[in-house]
Length: 47
Image (cartoon, rainbow, N blue to C red; front, side):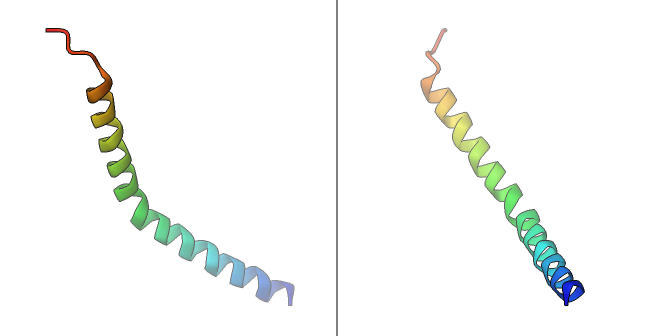
């Protein structure tokens, strides 16, 4: 019983890791782009 629960947890864990691996690059790219744009917008122009 305990082994089956552990196996189910491992399946769920690997599935969530797979989904995170697929979604994380897009999320990081969007967040970094947004942060960069915000930083550029907030940085006073010194030229």
